[in-house]
Image 1 (tube, rainbow, N blue to C red):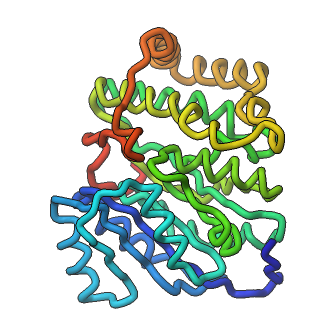
Image 2 (image 1 turned 180 degrees about the horizontal axis):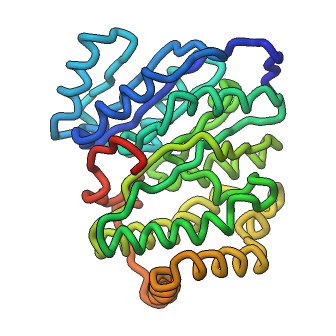
Length: 315
């Protein structure tokens, strides 16, 4: 367990696994580089290109010309996010290693400081930012955002934020000791579930930093929304066989009390009755007619193309 003093200035490495992220990679890197650094020193910013075949590598290389603190790893191999995170963790020598998905944006200059400061508590091994959707512009995105807002009301205060549903995977940080003693199984997906369950096996606390906001685009096509929802539902089945109920109570970890669900549905129905009703029906249909993503067997998933757009602001 890491012992960080009250006044210690942390060292931080940020890794960005990226596959065909030409639309947003520059915005993300700029938002990382513009972070205030009162409580940490950014030692490395590494982009791990997973055999991108668009302009992702070229854009990063151009940014490197202006900022030598960025490193690009482009080995021409398609390995999947979890293998890239394993690579990042092996490379890390900082107190804290952070991973950001390439299709998000840090909302303000304080996101990293807020995430890093959570590690003042020596019992904390893993931290997540708060991922929030950008403004919806069509039917599919309104459905996606209504679903997210409903579930957000359920999960945000459950167990004082320390629950498996508050770790989205797109913006997480772990301590060096956690990184040194953890790796994702080969051909695995559901990185956020693996990290959370592993932290519980190690008896480490997870902290959800509600005011450290990162932004993402919801799918703008219904078929992609359906595929993304199916992937989220399958994540539990993909990850839990690697963990033992003799050490942690997996079913309890995934259980959200009925009272929290009722509260979330009630608040959402009041705020957005039409789309909340549609989302509930949609989720029921998804459980009756689930879809499968064969890419999961290779530790990857079919890319949701419509989310891969530039993010410039919260509005």
